[in-house]
Image 1 (cartoon, rainbow, N blue to C red):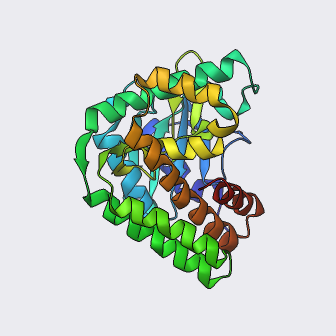
Image 2: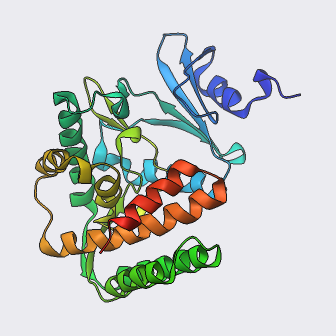
Length: 278
């Protein structure tokens, strides 16, 4: 039987911080634990089940965190054998708990746009067709999986396929992207914070807007306006056109993953997103 003392997260925290206490926090997923040191400072210890995601998040903190300095946790240490990271705990509350249609919600979107703009401007690369070809291939893989499990009709397959063609023929800017940039990974408080960098990589810049567009902005366009005001510019005509095709990726991914993971909420999101495509 595994004890608290055997937990590699706790061992990592004790090795680097000395005496610690576990701080109960029901908002955190099971693989993440909050601890405090002798001085009362709070930290987060996160353990990955995937070596790839562990290395991706470690790389993000070590190489790209500087562009969002002051808005992300500080990496204190890690254990490669346990796939565990020790990070400072950001103050604040999850942005998804902010009251809907409140000034606080609009402010969170503005700050989220401002911080993402720091990352994108520091890492952007001019447009090329390479990304479009790769993303089109990825979408076609999701389409094939959805078709194989009878999650989409022939007409829906053709609709998604048209967006794959659009992607393959499109030039798009790239940047280092968070790739799960939404309120569940934002913290609002004295300083706006962003967490969860396990998906982070260089990708099409507009992809960091797609999840917000199809999970938040379409039903609350004033939040899109607040976000882009913070970001520092509106979406251009090419990005607006591409956003719909990234919605096709969002829809196909959610349908397949929702089916595989038995997640009806994710499946419903995929179905809703698919219904909004043209």
